Image (cartoon, rainbow, N blue to C red):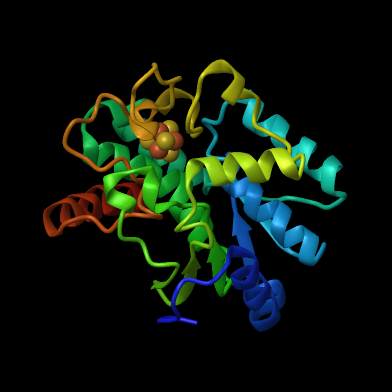
Length: 242
Ligand code: SF4
């Protein structure tokens, strides 16, 4: 799959299902892009795995989406959670809201609460995420298929525009996260996401206090050497304190 030129999102999902079956999963936080993938994949096969991570800091409306999606499609969403000992070690050492401290602490929180719970799902060989190249500078060059820590990471909507996503959602009556109606352009953890103002960039509602980072959580980001070393040090402190 790696190296193939962009193909349609539907074809890529179909190929992934044929090749990996239950070893393929859609990972979503129920934003429109993720929901397009969920809808497309479940139209191909109701056996498609849909996974989300309950970080422990999600807005109530995101948790409500789990039930909404299950009822709409007649399937179960798999919910991954961070390891309780790691969260306790991190928050007792660095505080509940450590992510306000600086970018390294924010990435540590994302690592413990989001990245590691997904990585721990050992039987997934290929993931699909709803990233688009048009969402931000840091996503401008994403490949539709890439390898990440021994698994495939698929971005079926890499070439899609925001309008194409909106059209699909409308035409297929895809369930929408309620926070869009409150002015959110992107939806993540409660303390790290806010509504955006007119004219602001789509990603401006995430970690808005950071000026020096590319607003990615680690699932979609390869830190530079310095950031990676600092994250490694902080993470090893947390893991040692479990
Ligand atoms: Fe922690 Fe915020 Fe990342 Fe959620 S988005 S895991 S609260 S830093």
